[in-house]
Image 1 (cartoon, rainbow, N blue to C red):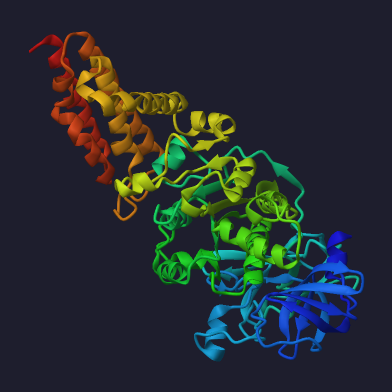
Image 2 (image 1 turned 180 degrees about the horizontal axis):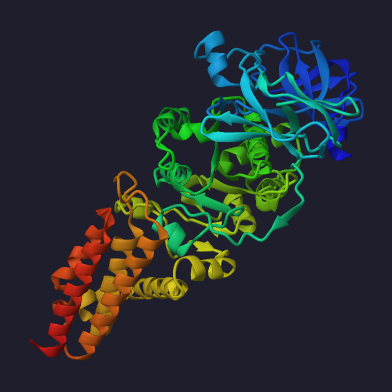
Length: 588
């Protein structure tokens, strides 16, 4: 009933009484919470966020300069909803699903107030192929037909808030999203388009354990801090530490079938970079543009603040729609800090009691509501789908103790901590291996055993132990130098350096190194472990650390990253390593 109620139409007209930036107050308006209204003579789009007696408080999604008390406010009677159907992929929307390409054609590069355009093209025809026939029973979420949209098959479904019935008539052909493609026995007409309120999660049959990793091809992520399909992750980091490049790598290489990218409150020049680069990125799976399986939502920091708050809900609803078709969806939110700042501004204009650093007291609750819509699930159509949410966080000055970062950490299961010092040393991805973590390691343990190697988890634990030891030894090294360390610890320092430079560093712009599959990751880690074992044995046998570190084969190992057919080269290096280090042991 909740969904039906939120889609029930109400009407009414009131007048403006008070204006405070994007927050306005109307009186005499018959409205419910989250109703969409049209404000002023220019019919600016807004949403009811508070009702106090006869006063209705509205957040307006557009610039309110120039409007004044006494102007009319009209209730559309509908909740803020998105249009879902063929045409979502390759689209670029603003925070309230207005297609920016259409708006540019209408008025140029500067969007005027009060203008609107439907989220889906009403004139374009799509080839619809039924997958059910007359006499079949259909229910909420049942797939009734397919449309070939780009290289993705768009599965047309019965809306989840419709009870379903027996198919009376269904036809194949070329239709617009508003044309009736099927009729049920009770007279219900089905089109290829459905509307869904953005603040209401789309229903599923059941949520499943996230026990399959979302493979990204990035060694530090897949190898040390994996995220599961249907999982949640945060990438906090200061300006210039590589958040956007990391998210683009995830969008390009992760084994999700659909990508939804939300540019929430980012600077205009950074968003421009995303909008210009994304259409030119090639999808490595199909060889076609990555945009063919991507939906972009662009809401820059100079756009109205209320629309920023709505953009994350618009994005997650679109992601859930593709999940309901049975696809694995990856959602990138860049950045949730700007979303939180929008909440803070609106909260202050509502004169609510502020929480820590001026953020509203419900900050943690809103973040939870958003991230909890992620998950791997059995969907109404009977298949399996997932939404993985990866949120970038931009803490002021890189301070991870601020409220948005801390509240996000309480919710997400994966923390990829970007470090400005690493980026200054040109170590990319600049993810700090000591501050980062993944809480999916235990649940993914069996998958790695079965699909990579039974000893992969031991190798990963060994690498983390070496890196931790190196961190403890660095304080001594900085005081007295590495030569003053015991010989065994000198080798530990060198092995840790190899893990950092050979395994963790990865060049996003190199044609080969930009992506590294799990087999190659395992072989690289195993090679470093072999050198470690040989080096410790040689040191015990009396070889000097300087001699061990000088073996030529060790210095050839980093080149493996840049070789596509790496196995013959790696085998040759390992044989050479055996010969060289064993020669040191025997003293020859």
